Amino acid sequence: ILATEADFNAELVAHGYSNAFAGLFGGLQNYMTYGGSILYAKAGGEGKGSSLAVSIGTAAFFFVGPSIASYIPRCMAGTLLLHIGIDLFLEGVCD
Image 1: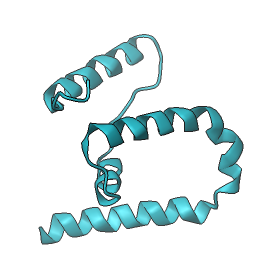
Image 2: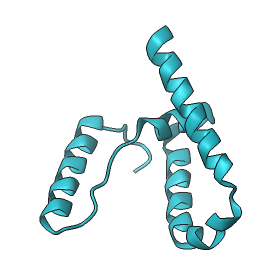
Image 3: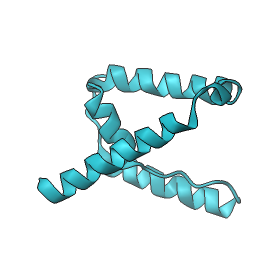
């Protein structure tokens, strides 16, 4: 599974099917976020091994997150969103 290259077209099609099924059965839709990808790349994430580690960490945070989320200052999330927004703006204007 780690030796194959990512197929972004297949990923987009899978997101389409997932959103269609979620809409049919009244579930929440998923979405792709460019900001998360930018943050991952800026943090030095490369390859499928680190992607797998992020996936496992995200899944673990899904179960543990609500109990520790109250200890994370709100300004941290706001600062992160502001940083990503400024970075995307500069990339769009300057690059």
